[in-house]
Length: 372
Image (tube, rainbow, N blue to C red; front, side):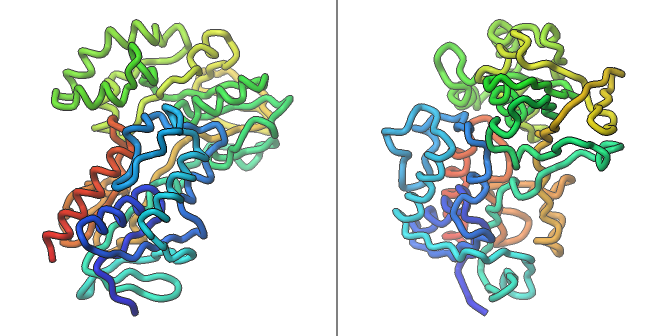
């Protein structure tokens, strides 16, 4: 068994940020990563993905993103930055070392298939992308076409000449539908629930900056103030075949931990008829999809943009009260009910996920230094 001041689970942005922040206050950590590369989840995202947050505000502790990156960096640029970040801070994760269970018989004990680790502190920074959520439609097993989760989608090329249904209208669903439509593919989006749609920029300023400026105000007041502006920019969602959420965008983030759709072109493609809107999926049979409004359609492929649902129960079997009803952490970037147990990067925010990860990492490092 190896002993450590802190064990960090995950070598994505949150894990790397925590390791660097600990270095900056004179502390050390061992970083465990189940895959064989840094930023494994980022490498699985679709090709066209760009950050929705600004380069200048997306750097992690101790190393800004390169000035040569565009305003909204691309997926491969983010991966390159994270690799450079690890080299810059001399962070050497233990690759191929998945944490299977965290308990506390005396110190924190982090179990892996090989060596176990005893630590004063544990930071769970594994993110959410390891738990794709899939639908349980009747007839799912009978579907005669290709059925895949958005985490398995790379680009439009394999779908040329196909009829494609994207299920779910979050950011992944909206962007994948746009990617397919821009490639001339017949694409529909199944939308079951009411939505919030925001422009990526409003009057030349990123929505992240708007959120930072308005953060001191009560979030429901912010939603009320922004509603007329958003309606002016986005228009009437009902005319697009969509229902507006009864909650405002900030209420949706804070209360439901769900990020609104940040539009970078999908809405115009819906208006042009290049992306069709359908109601929720009820059942599948062969290549036929039956929708909640009674309509049916024939599709060659279904892409489930149904998000992720992290489940940390098996990792923390003795500390379930640190988890919420969805089995993700109740709190991130702060002390939990258990001394020395922290989470970083798990909870969505309006002010930019990478920016928030940096803030959380620094706060966790300060809390751990105070524990010494």
